[in-house]
Image 1 (cartoon, one colour):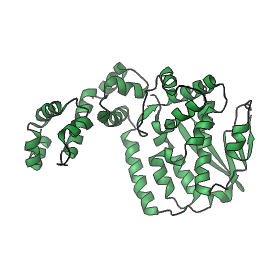
Image 2 (cartoon, rainbow, N blue to C red; image 1 turned 60 degrees about the vertical axis):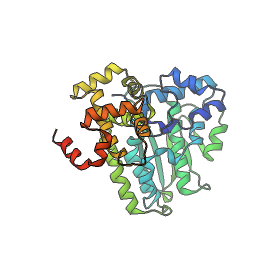
Image 3 (cartoon, rainbow, N blue to C red; image 1 turned 180 degrees about the vertical axis):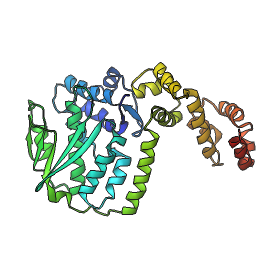
Length: 339
């Protein structure tokens, strides 16, 4: 199955690409990634992201594109993972939480923490299963880890060393400026070495109760997107309000074609149209409870071309009009549950 990444990893891609003379829309199209993705929580194919980073570095004639992208991002890019890390008691606990839940943000990325006496090594690992070019993705992962540690420990903090397994680039200037420490190339691992005491530092304004809430939330998210039909359902929910929730568009986000999506769903006894219908049914009940929300707005949020299309679908799905439902929703919901 294709690995997926939250689109938040590319939130600063367009400005980074333009800064080195590239056309971001053209680059995205060249690797088959959906253009104009603005929702950071929507999923896109990890392979496409890795190809995009490598192609961008090659087209710009630079070795450090991934690091330049990391320079513009940071802790907030982790989305729900950041919620649980922020309220851990210590920096070490926060980094361990990020490692434990990193797969929510990026299914192919893991983060190990190794303790060796008075030093700690933070090692982001990209798990691909086969050798593919991923230097820029590695730089992005190590760079983001550094940005996170800097956010936790303050701008004056610096690591002991940063290691990369690949050969030294032609120009090391970006690396020196970014990491503010010795950068070793041709090393045995990709990662950051720091003092073990850095991990013992308390997190500012940590709230354990919020951390527990965030943990329950993130585990719910993980369970929902752990299967293929769960990934499809998640994408449908995100794409419906944008008005282009076709099987082809969902397939593009999954890195396959529409026929493959239909086949994989059929294997689990589901269909694309059934999932769309269920997502609409669950959402419409919430939306029409808000009587000050116009039906044209509800139609748009559910991906209907017009209010009349919503009205026809609602009557077919619920056996009544929206006005009738609003006047007696409880009994009509009970009717739905017995069908």
